Image (cartoon, rainbow, N blue to C red; front, top):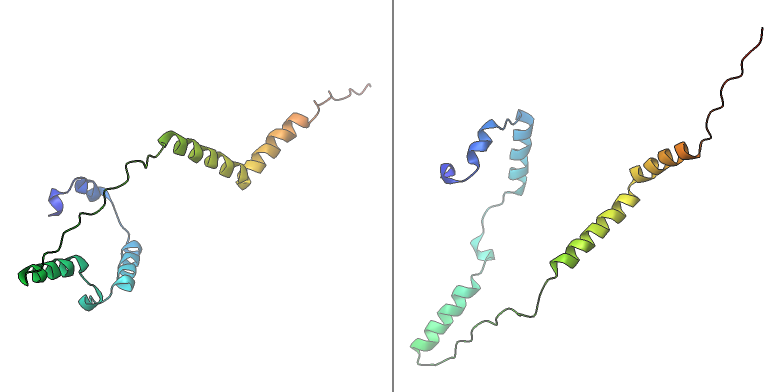
Length: 122
């Protein structure tokens, strides 16, 4: 039930326009297909049935457990974070607005100070 899910009550305050609702329906309709069970095969069930039939026929087959995940695969989270930050900095430098900001700050620094206006004598 939707009432048993956390955070669902927050959706009561969300307002959706008619256009948004219609677009969502169109998207769902365009992705909806008739279910065709013959396209899907349950390989696990098939292997279990083959083992049951073999055992019923008197054949003994050793059941091999799946290989355990490699324990030597360690992810260095700090290195991944540092790489992510470095890539973000590079992408900010490539952003078009980064060049405009540099041009604005550079133009102010390079302009000479204004000279006071000359006074006219009468």
